[in-house]
Length: 332
Image (tube, rainbow, N blue to C red; front, side, top):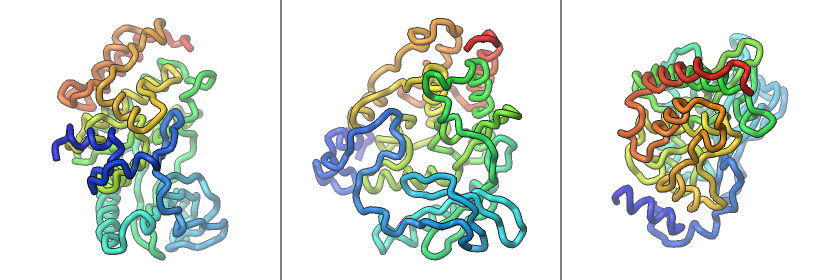
């Protein structure tokens, strides 16, 4: 199946894995902006883990829940062997994968997590351990203090543009490090970037999970993750590579600067069509106070075809750092 026909089936509401025309369309909910964890409501999470403070899981003592999403719960926990505080992510696979493919799903996720654990970079949240316990795959990750940049994507909560442009330049630097080691994140978005307001340090989360989510989307016709930030090729079956992360970073920076997403729609098919075919608004129609070079950088990052984007995350990082220096430090 070609990428174009694959995308076409999605836009008509078909399940691309089965060819059953129209069966997914009725399940697609009306969607909020931004589209976070948009999931067809098939198979309630009856086997999802829900751990109470004080519970023990795979050698970790649960302290409190930090958050939950479409396929995971995250807890602050203490490693009972070392005393180290970790962020423990538990992924429930049983409700979304047929029984005869659960072993394959677990192995694939554990392989991705193992690859992520080899990425040691000061701006990437480290993965300490990946394993399986009580039918659940888990990741024990570095516990990072701070708030996600997702809390700064709305009017009234926006950070100074010089600051966010510089931070996104640092994200690009960290992505270059990962890409050079053969790891593509696949789910870059403000919510996956942690910001420490005291140190002004940023950290990227969730390496090791996004590739699994992306392959699961292709298999089922259900989107797991954050489609508002996905590159066109992530929807239509084309290879996903470093330039896909750069598209997502461009979308994230646009939202952090303007308080709105560059591609919006009231339905999943409408959003996919917008990302695949429609231009984003020029930055300076919304923020005329920002340099034209920054708008040009975003235009390049969000090109529909990967070769038209930046050649590497390092190239994008250099441009963003230059743009940051051109922004008035006092500009809000």
